[in-house]
Structures are given as structure tokens and as C-alpha cells.
Length: 146
Image (tube, rainbow, N blue to C red; front, side, top):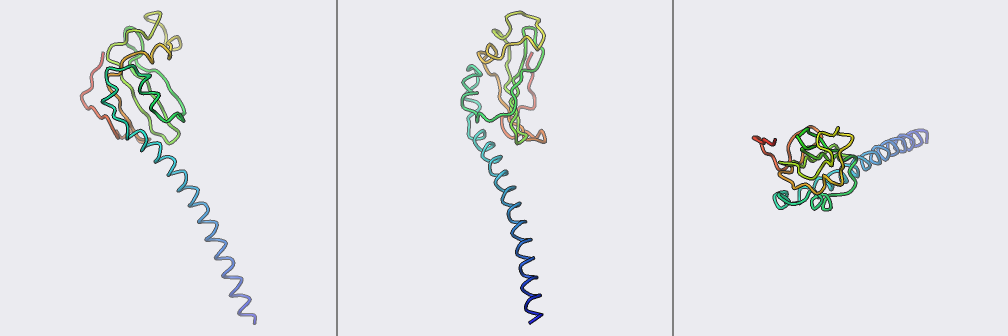
């Protein structure tokens, strides 16, 4: 009888340990699935179809749960690219070849750049990177924009 009680206790402890491990695994799997779905949604977009069109036309097609969106670069008239970062670590660069309408005041500091004006700029290239800076889509090794 004592052996049966010990065996039942052992099985109960093992079952609880595996159940807890399975719960944590399911949480990780669920997070990875969400992350992969963000990446998959972005990968389904035809980046080339947005070349020469306002950046805003690309932004409305993206998953809207990005963690940040910022302008970078120091062209004569303003920023040269837009960076969109997602919680999964992926980020997108939207390059502008020659900014035209971005800055009301040429030579303004980055804090004075207008994102609303920049959204009207025409996209030259769009590139998607994963969290380790590996290019996933739109890779252009010889990119030169001034």
C-alpha cells in the first residue's frame, strides 16, 4: 500500500512539472506565432510596387502594432529614410532618394522634421531586417542615396 501511495505521489509531481513546462512552452509558441505573423504579413507585401509612391501608401498596408517610427539621415533638405521598428525586433527602412517636401525649414534639426510631411515623400527602396540585422526582403547591397 505504501508503494502505491509513493507511486501516485511521484506520478502527480511529474504530471504537474510537465503541465507547467507545457504551459510555458505554449506561451513561447504563442508569442513566436504572433511574431511570425507580423513578419509574414510584411513579407507578403510587394515592396517594389511602392517605389515612386508616397511613403504613406506603404505605411497604411503595414501591421500597425509597430513600437516606433523615426526619421533618419541628414540630407540637405532633411531625412533620407524612415525606420519602423516592431516589438519582435524586425525593422523596416524606407529610403527616400531626394527629399522634397519633408522640411518646411531646410537645414532644420531632426527634432524639427515633420513626420506628416515626410509621409508625402516618394519611396526609393524599402528593406526589411530581422532583429539581428539580417536582411529579409528588399536587400540592395550597392545602395547609394544622396
